[in-house]
Length: 535
Image (cartoon, rainbow, N blue to C red; front, top):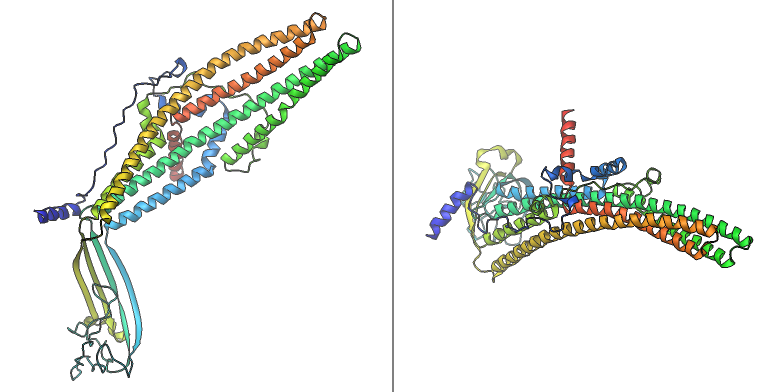
């Protein structure tokens, strides 16, 4: 019964089937019906949300941001590294695929041999007589009078004297102590993939290749978000610097007014000291902001694959913080399984681990091979063309591990454990993707509410400063009220700018959590390649 199964498996394997080990099935992952943190500005869209998510950076309507992202996609070194790894995995797949085909080697050699005149000759006591065609006499009957010059275990490139495989003159000089041997030929071998070990290896390699592609897409998503985040931070810091300069100017006017009133006897020296301290405190924030600004420019330069200061002239001119879109179409949670590259990569890694269980299982079964050699061997180079110089060997072989101290079974258990590890990693990646989206939705909606309140605070503090200055100039209020109102206005303005920056950054984080961006970039690259091919 077992032999019939093997025979059937051999027949099916030649047609491309019958592979031992588990067949991979995509895991069924339960997903919620919707995101709990969805707000009116982030309701699931009914009109193909993937179209907007695919080119989400364009929703900020900032030409500079669009230009930076387009250039980063073309020249970023992390993307280039990811593309190299994809090519590497593709070549590895080609290596595994070659295991299904026969192997053919060609080689040739020339040797000049000399036997000892005083020692034993191949187990005999004297060299054999001339065995060339037409020679008389009989060969030495010693136990070692058979010469086999095969370079392979299944046959050789030289013939044997026992059976007269080649009498083209190869042994015409064996009565001498020196002679030449010319030989050349082909060796072929083919392992028939009866139980699918090679095909499972190919399956695993293809899954690894697809996982490398998804890793490159994940790098793309991270790059898009990183460029946008640093650009938004740059514009936010520039706005903070402008507010600092504006407040320094206003506070310096207060210092000048206080000094004038002090000289007129209407203010105290304490008021002057407090006003000067206020200006110095505000000025102290400028160096830290300049540091953050320059670091953002440097980071953007490196993300674009350029020198850190390459974008200095382009980005040092202040501009507004890119405003977020009025609505972010988040789609459904189930779409994350299709769109997020890290989830797709984890799924492909699970497929690879499943296939490697089959590779390990195939080691339990016999290996069937066909081997053969064909060549020419002669004692003189001019005799290689003669028909009787031809030799060949052909035949099947079977190898089957009988005892290996449990090594194969242990390896199967190892691969099963790795499969379970990959499954757990996949499930964890899915949960993390849901967490990322929920967190980004909460941060986005709550920061919007915070920004609205900060805007009201800025408006109120601005009125308070105007009133305090008017009252102080008329001597109707204490100078401390002026300082407090100015300090509160500056703090509220700075917090408002940071909130505006955070709102836009949270939108970027949301788009990244949704896995958007890589589809549009791949489509654009394909269109570019097609246009170049047409030219």
